[in-house]
Length: 68
Image (cartoon, rainbow, N blue to C red; front, side):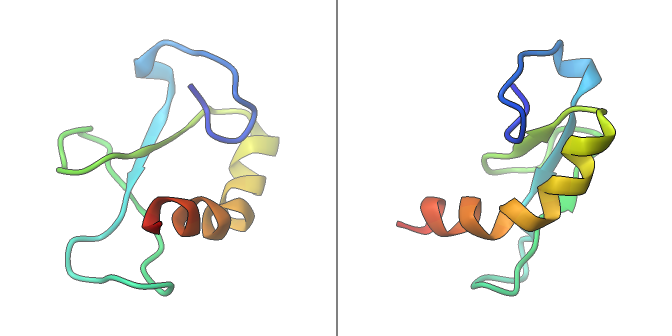
């Protein structure tokens, strides 16, 4: 499911982002995981232009929620 539009897509149509292993805290913005095999829970974003544009803006809120 895309974290921006909340629509369901086949996994192959989504891009996965994970938090970098060497950084923590508010400056640790997610990095793409094209192989979809890095450890940890990921954020999945669909290929729609509006979702790709909104993802960097909403990621800060998503990461704060996960840090709780």
